[in-house]
Image (tube, rainbow, N blue to C red):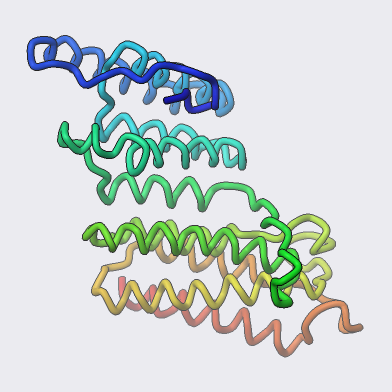
Amino acid sequence: DGHVDGTSGTSGTPATAKDGAKDDAKNTTTNAAAAEAATRDPASRAVRRATAWYDEMRARGVLPDRDTFRLLIDVCGQSGRAADLARAERFFNHLTRQHCAELAAAGVHPDADIFNAMLIALAKADPSPPPPPSSQSPPALSKAGACAASKLDRADAYLAEMQERGIDPTCETFNAMLMACANSSVVPSARTGHEDGGNATPAADAADDVRLLRAEEYWDNMRALGVQCNEITLSALIRLCKTVKSGGNGNGNGDSRVVRAARVARAVELAEECSSDL
C-alpha cells in the first residue's frame, strides 16, 4: 500500500475493539484537522496538509471512516486544479477499490455524500485534454468538444457506479452534474475573446453542443426519477445559458448565429422548466 501521492508507505490495520475508543478519538481529530484545512488554508496548502494527515492516519493503523473520505475529497475539490482532482479520485478509489474489503468489514461504505463530493470536485475542476486517440480510433470530436465530453463521461461513470451500488442520486448529485456541464469550458485555444461575446470557433461550438446535450439528459433524468430541484439547480442552468453563449463573427469561424441562438434558447428553456418546478 502506498501514500496518496504515490510515495511508499505502510498500510495500517483496523483498530481492535480494545483500542476502539482511542482510535475513534484519533479519527475525530484527523477529521477535524481535514475540515480546518478545507476552510482556513489556501487550497494548495490544505490539500498537502489533509494528505499528510491521511498518510499518518494509515501509518498509525487508524481506520478512516466515511467522514474522513468525504472531507478529504472536499479539500481536494476546492482548488479546482486537475492535480488535486486526481488526488480526490485516489481517495475515492481507496474507499471503493483498494481498501474496500477492509473498510467494508468495519462498516465503512461509500454513500450518496461520497459520490456527491466526488461529482462536485469534478464539476469544479479545470478541464484537461483527453488522451490522444489511437490510430484505430474513429474520427472524434474536436479537442475542445472532447475535453467537455471527457469530463462529463467521468460524471456519467460516477452516476452509473452510484446506481449500481444501489445508491439513489439526490438533488445534489444532479446539481453537481449540471454544474459540470456549465463549467466544462473549452481549452483556451478553442475560443477567442471573452466568455460573453467573444468569437467562437468550431471547437468551441462543438464543446457547447456536448454540454447542452448532456445537461438536457441530466435534467430529464432528474425529473424522471422524481428528484426535486432547488435554487442551486436553477443557478447551474442559468450559468449554462451564459457559458453556451458563444460569440461569432459570421464568417465561418463557428456555427451560424441562428444555430447559436437556438442553443441559448434551449438552455433558457431548461432554466424556465426548472424555475416552474421550484
